[in-house]
Amino acid sequence: MATAKKTSKKTATDTSAAVSGIPAGQDADVTTPAKTRGTSRQKASDKPASATRTPSRRKSATASATEEAGGTVVKKTRAAAPATRKAAASPAVRKKAQAPAVQEAPQAPAMREEAQAPAIRESASAPAVPQKQNTAPTRKKAAAAPELREITPRPRPAGNPYLPMPATVQEVIQETGNIRTVRVVLDDPAQMDAFTYEPGQVGQLSVFGAGEATFVINTPPSCKDYLQFSVMQTGEVTSAIHRLSPGDKVGVRAPLGNSFPYQQWKGKNIVFVGGGIGMAPIRTIMLHLLERRQDYGRISLLYGARSPRDMAFSYELAEWLANPHLDCTLCIDAPSEGWPHKVGLIPNVLLELAPSADNSVAVLCGPPIMIKFTVQALEKLGFAPENIITTLEKRMKCGIGICGRCNIGGKYVCVDGPVFSWAELKELPADM
Image 1 (tube, rainbow, N blue to C red):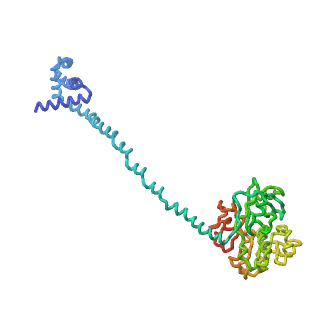
Image 2 (cartoon, rainbow, N blue to C red):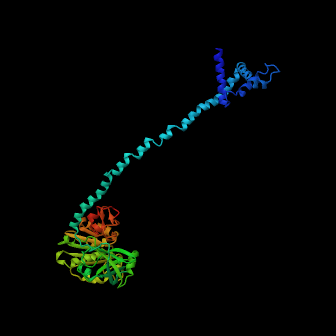
Image 3 (cartoon, rainbow, N blue to C red):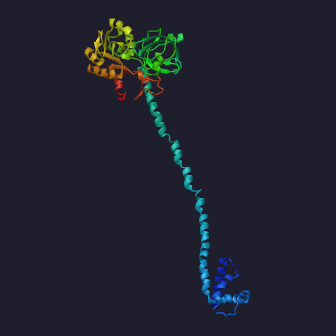
């Protein structure tokens, strides 16, 4: 038992020396406290140096110090315990530093699964949404194309529809304070001879460097000497057109749009109603029907403006009033000195004239506000919506259905129009 006890104490002493970094054979730090505490029990003649120099005394002194002051070793062992614990804990720190989590992070299967997630392949290869969006308008166009060909056969521009035909201004007529009529001739004689169109079709008149705008061709198709456009000054392009003089060069893209369905009117009475610049498209269809007077019933015209000075084609009014095949009525909004004709707004004068709706078609064109109330007057007179015809040429832009700026609901004015029946327009959005 004594041997075991000494062995355990010696082991503790060696451990304490090892922790403090002193070799096992050099235990001066261990023996010094023991001898210091045991000095009171030794003789005054004992010298610490001799104990330090003699190995046998060192061992016995160490042993006796260990036996007499065992607490010293225990205390040193306990004081070194934290160091031992730190040394024991250091592998844990190393383990944490070398934790496999850092190594697992780059190889985390979650990140690889997200990078190789099949959702991306599914969304990239899912054809359902694009096919539905792409096929829907295609079906509508495919359904509408045959209908347009059957209902509105029309002349179309020859060659490139984007390329204007060069033309020369032949004559300029000042109709009113803000309306001018420009007569142009195509520079290519062959193009001029072959040019055909139907009443109601329009053309893009362009001034090089300024732009182009849409105007109805207001001469009847039988006129082969020139193409006539009547232009109200409202913006940059129309102002450039008003500055044109005979001999100036312009461009013409025509004919564009549909036309008045005059073939369907044969045998019927025709009521024309025009207001201001709206007389331009009325003029072309009216003169065309008068050339075929035998195919139609009674043909009448109600033309009005704000004042006598605002009436376009004033040089033709006398001829229209004298034509026995045309029942012509003129009116202005307010009384004017020397005016011998009707005074009043067009819708009111129309109700006063009260044309019969039986076997009749009404064709009107003018400012939007005039059209709105004139349609109401016609409906009061019994005209059915399908027998009220108007034109929306001023809403046309490119003229060939490319830019989409003339779109109204499901209609393109430049492709499906500009001529529409009131029944067609009633199906379009209210902001038309």
